[in-house]
Length: 182
Length: 361
Image (cartoon, rainbow over all chains, first blue to last red; front, side):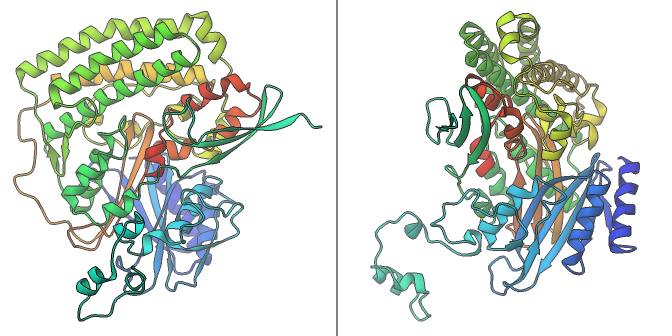
């Protein structure tokens, strides 16, 4: 484990976000992992600037629904950074679907693709992104592809009848997409 | 008339094994800029992973990528094990290293073989692929498959090596060694290889850091970062090897880094076969995956592989995210290609060892 890198990360994040902002744990091989949960999304810019200041590397960004099945709103975004072998994950919360998150491409150019990807998969609005176009999904696919159930028959444009869905949803309210079946 | 025109390559093109669209601005024979358009093999695998249970995802993740196929389930398993605090038996950890290093040799030989083909040295291409068959035989003999090994499971591995198999692998490695030495010699001295690859597709260290590139692409540009050394996992701490790196940052140095790593992998497998203790290879019973989050990383053949797992305590992941090495390396092509000749485009693309299917998942 790289103790110098861990201390550099801890010091930078403490300066940016205040004391006790990082929680540390280790895997069974003794490698350290830092975890930061932002109190507000303004803290993301401060954290990104501080991490860029110590030459941390952005590895990946993970967005997810707070409730996997979208029964209630809210998303979180986990930014994973590395400094010489030590990983820190900084998590921002978006409690409502209207919340936005600032781009960190100003400090980490390679955030470009990651931010574009979570825009299309979770319909998260990113402010200040230099190139907010689709990354993987075609423009005719509605934003937020991972947010909703897309029945296989719909996805494959296969023939299905409303009769089938009437039986499936007998006694309950039929979802809008099933009502459109021919 | 400016003399600049657009050269569209892909998404379906005879020079591409997988679909990717390159929008290349050229002036005469010189590339001025590059635009990338991805998404032609997006499979929605992360969505699938959230609908499958933890054991089913071992099978699913092995199908993210063919050349790095063992790295995916092994890193996924490490994320699950980190979250659940599972201690993998020592013998199983050695067996995971062997599987990863067998795949690394085969993957690197494939890449440098294709490079020979792209420079027009087809006899070397065929020779490299023939040498690679030695490792394909190992895969087939030990695991029963030539690509997907099915070696990993949560808490251990699904295969073992007895004395007969140990001797078989050692024999194959002995067969491989002189060929690797010979191929390395050709790549370092052959005038055609040197002429076509030296000083081509250069990625300076500052740009490599800016793009956050990983694996042999980063190491050839002066970033001596190898996850096996930086954050050791499995039994790499117990094994003797060097991080292979270079400072030239061109197509040639990326190939040489890969070839030296292949040589190291042979040694790593031999060390594992020598040191591996007797003992169990998997858990006696499956443990419950608790609520929480965990990260795991490994050094796949193409570079750093990252898995993030979030669990809500149910039998399927709340979120499973992975980032493959190639994902980080694509955008660096803009620096590598600017100013290069049109004829060098395939060489430079191949030098990042691109995997489009695993980039898009």
